[in-house]
Image (cartoon, rainbow, N blue to C red; front, side, top):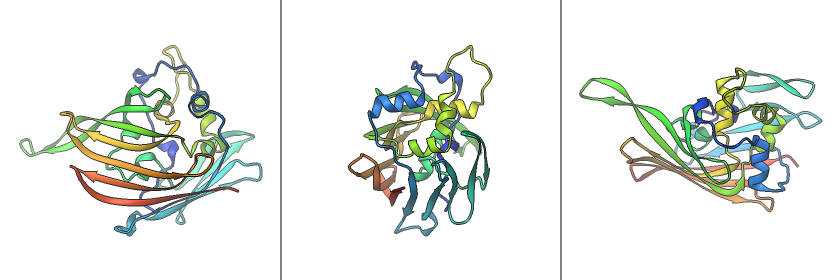
Length: 254
């Protein structure tokens, strides 16, 4: 499945983009969503009536005590290794992953390389700045431009939160100390902390440095009684024209 990237691989942030909040990811999630029923994802399936290459399914496996043990796409897997309750390594196929922009069929990687300019009231990244290369015919070369991604969210929790917690990822993010006197920490983990959404993204609008809309992604989800996404239709458009739509389906461990 080409369009699958695991969520812990979607981040990397400059310490200069630190938010004013001293809360951990867990605290921000609880503040934004209240008393949420804990659910672990069993499968995420993506279907397209237009491009079979974009179809596939991710399967999440857990140990008897509820720890995430592996994520598989049918061709390979990522395996989670623990020392007691602590995640110590993730091994296996690197393309068995799930990032927001891979799930949403985005041509950009703002959630992997961007810096957060603004957060919403719940602590979600609202405006993300990132660099994009465009071909310049006058110089016959690629030039780097500053783009922005404006992200909107449903009033629903990030459905991956407790799955990531079961994989030890949330503990890692909670351990990040966002201040300038901190000891050296992985830039990828810092960026993961900065770009982590506590709610479920419903729209991403990408603009170039002139403020022109280049690409728009809209997700319309169906939620269960516990406010977890069960299915959704993801539509993408470029320059105002809808170019593709996909159906995503979630199942959860009973």
